[in-house]
Each structure stands twice: as C-alpha cells, then as structure tokens.
Length: 299
Image 1 (cartoon, helix red, strand yellow):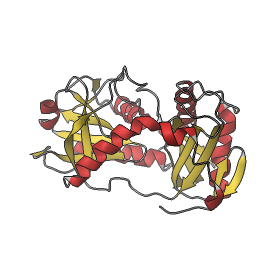
Image 2 (cartoon, rainbow, N blue to C red):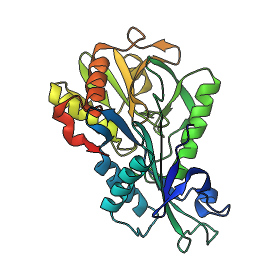
Image 3 (tube, rainbow, N blue to C red):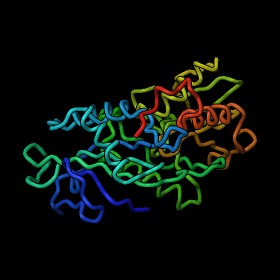
Image 4 (cartoon, rainbow, N blue to C red):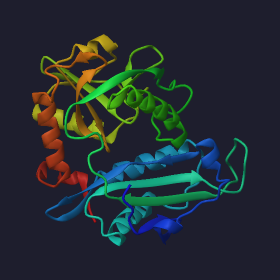
C-alpha cells in the first residue's frame, strides 16, 4: 500500500511509521475492534468524502457492540477525518477509522483495557478493477447472525471474510460469493450483492448482511431513476440465472459480476442497468451530479 505522512492516533497527528500499538493489545488477540471504510474523491470543489456522517454514525453504533465508552463525539471524529485528509494533502483515496481495545488486559472480557482510536488515509484505486469479475461460491458460510452482530463492522468478523477470499483467489477467481446458514445467497467477503432480472433490481434483505452504505446509495439511485428494487432472499440458482449481477461496497464501488462459478451471467460483461447505476454513482461521488451533493463533505 502507498503510505502517507500522518495517522491520527488518540487525538494526535503521528508520523506514519510511529503510529504503533503494544503487542499485547486486546484487539490483536481477540478481534475486539470496530472500523469503517470510507472513500474520498477529487472533485471540482476539492476533495470530497462520501457520506461521512453515515459512516461515523455506523462506527459509533458498532462500538456499542463492545460496550466501548467513546471519549469523543461523532462530530469530533468526523472533524478528525477531515483534518487527517488535509494534513496528508490527500486528493482521493481511502479512509480507515478504527476503534479498538488496546493494552491493559488479557482474557475475553475487554472492559478495563485501554481504548484506542486511529484514522489513516492513503491513495487507493479501484479495488476489484473496472471490468466484470469472476466470483466463486466458497465452501465457508457467512457467520450466523445470532453468533455476532451482522449490522456492525467488527474486526473479528472479518476472519470469515479472509477465509472466503483466500479460497476464491486460490481457485483463480477475482472474489468470493458467500452463502448463509440456510444455504441462500448472503454477500461477498466485503460487498453486498445485487442482481437484475427482467429490468428489476434485487438485493438481499438486512438481518444477515451488513447494511452497506454503498448498497443504500444504489437503492436510492434506483428509486430516483424509477428502477424497481426489491429486497428478497434468493437461492444460488436464482442469482446464476440473472440477466445481470454486481457487487457494491466502499472499496468495490459498483462492480459487475460476469461469472459465478462456471456460469456466465448475462453476456459475461457489465449489463445496461449495472452500467447505468455505476455511472450515476461514480458521477455522484465525484461531485458531478448535484442531485447527490448532500452525500459529500468537502475537506
């Protein structure tokens, strides 16, 4: 990854290479951290952060999963994000705020350990590339929703995503597709999934999948464009028989799926509805669509 100069750590701007934690930090051993992935883009008005308030609100919600007592308010963390972008003179890239239990206590109960907060920013291009990708249905299932909080971005939850991603890539695919405990479609390792059939857009309902902010953007665009969007459970066969399919996520943006396992989706390339939604989304986050100007916070 490309380094920048400073990381915001517990209220201070610290040189990148000096932003360190103790080897006995609780989160390192037990996954007791929460985080967000946020993007910023260069626009005609300068660097713009996409849906900053929504991301920070979800970050604070995730923190409640671990009974974290936040020493800052949401507005203060949002300001720290902007300050970190400015300090590093970042035009466009990725933003990673993370809250985690640090040094001071071992054992599964983290209460009593230090609470650390960091914000890092760096340049980062397209996560899955510009073309339609190949995805593999992996042997691992998504974590059962009753065994964790599926609405929170918890660091420990992503061990499941790592297993899925490794399996897919070792098999020669670009990304994984994960089923849930019922054997139905869930999501990607770090993306929500959509599919299109006869002009209608479908996606998996909340409750077992992360309420993705890019997911919400795409659903809002569908509503604005008069495209019917339905939340429903689906078997893998339904997804494979779709006219189009795509992933959404902060890192993935809107990425077309051209193949699932050995099955070609549609023409195997980005379909017309996916392209329309992607084009509108990218125009919006780059400040080129005034209709979505309220999504942007300028640094």
